[in-house]
Structure formats: C-alpha cells, structure tokens
Length: 63
Image 1 (cartoon, rainbow, N blue to C red):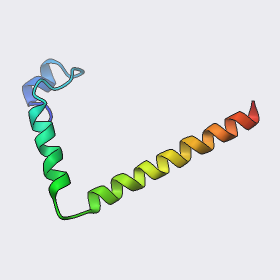
Image 2: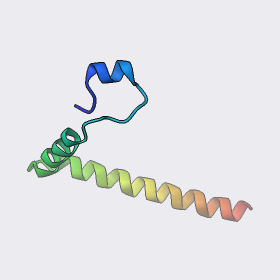
Image 3: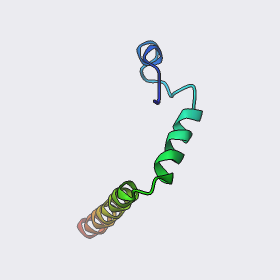
Image 4: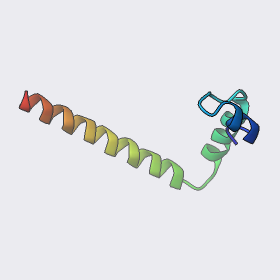
C-alpha cells in the first residue's frame, strides 16, 4: 500500500511518508516468475517512445 487511509485524508496531494513498502512491493512484483508485468511494461515503453518520436518528427515538419 502506498499511503494509509489517514495519510490520504490528511494530506491527499503529498508523497507517501514510508517509501520502504513501495520498494518492497516493486521487488516482489519484479521477482515473480510471471512475466506479464514486464511484458506489459515494455510494450508501454515502446508505444510511448514511438509516439513521442512521431510527434517530434511531425511537429518539426510542420514548423
């Protein structure tokens, strides 16, 4: 869990005070044998990079 319920209600826009749980969750997800998370993450990275590159090229041509 990123933030406790009381933390969310008291300071909804602040960052979590305890970062240890976030890193534990990240390590747990990355350590699993199921590679669906990594596959989805890499697909998102590829799509994002291609989109930014395409927008950059089209914007430069239009300028």
